[in-house]
Image (cartoon, rainbow, N blue to C red; front, side, top):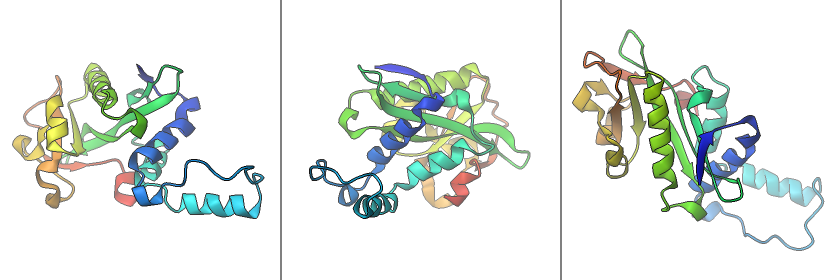
Amino acid sequence: MLIRRETRSDIDAIRAVTSAAFAKSDTVSTPNPPNPPDPPNSPSTLATRHALNTTVPVEATLLDELRVSDGWLPALSFVATGDRGEVIGHVVCTRGHVGSDLALALGLGPLSVHPAHQRHGVGLALVHAVLGAADAFGESLVALLGSPAYYGRFGFRPSTEYGITAPDPAWGDYFQVRTLTAYQPSLKGPFTYAEPFDRV
């Protein structure tokens, strides 16, 4: 496994990995379509594409929207590649803000690992990589919405311990913060994600 920055040629593979990682079990199509496959523009193929497009996980759509937003930070978008160079995982941090003075911060997510490669340390390596890069760039903190049991191993703690409030108070301890070297305790207030998080 290799962790590296995303390139433009990775975008379709990242979308596929994100879709697979967040797919609902009742929306997964059969792995082996009938032989021979229908021509690319036949009515049955177009109907299948339409059906699949209606079940695209929101995380994949969010990622597409983030990529063209003001919050996108190309240097903080990482992929994990497998033995053959194929993309097997992805993580991104985008620009967020804290407080009424809109102090700079980061929002982590989505984090995606292809189901065939989950529970093999891919997500662990991706999160460590993006946190290390964020720290090297002088960022103050990273916030996310996720499992405290999973993200606690990276040093994430409930945001309220730092005086930072979630966009939705109902998130409770699932909204977490990881401080970095440049963090100052005076950094407090409501956290705001990049705009697509409010829309998608």
